Image 1 (tube, rainbow, N blue to C red):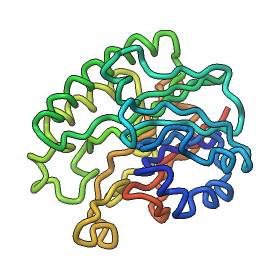
Image 2 (tube, rainbow, N blue to C red):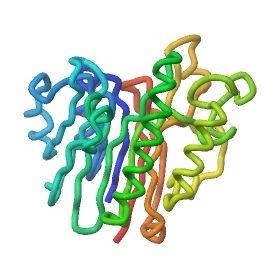
Image 3 (cartoon, rainbow, N blue to C red):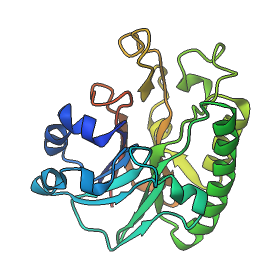
Length: 253
């Protein structure tokens, strides 16, 4: 089961840049999308249906902002839209699909672009972890794919020294991610890859992508109960519909 996480930075813009053609060729079973920046009715979903994807959307109340979706070749048994935590659901940041073997979440964790948003990010992180602590009791085989907007370790960022006071690499953010992973998850990419210079997001400024001055902020975190099922994990850094690239994991049953 090939599972991908991809912050597309606007699904309509990504479609205009060849997203559908790439998806058709990529043999992906489930793709978790973040930052759709659209409601379902604003998207030509027939393009997804034509290439065999059932699609499920959870958008923000604010038009053209945030939003998550999951596209799946096999229809899931169940879809959970949101978390029932009002402030999280208002911004359209979590959607879950359930299959016989496992459940998959698409997560878009906020960025801390200014002091107000950084405060909100910490509130989100606290409430989301509590939500998952409870959820994983009922769904012990869980994969949380998404844009976490946090680099975990120094190896995950091109310039750890200069960025140590920048949101996305703050000690408190990194500690939270550390605790989150250690509460029963595996960073599927690092489970199989210990090489540096592997990133999933690059600033649009200063030729960052060409020079590979990036951050690894997109993850497929896999429940420890699925550890033996991790067949492969990867970052598809040559795919360019967004300032992020897809990351993924292959799960074998």
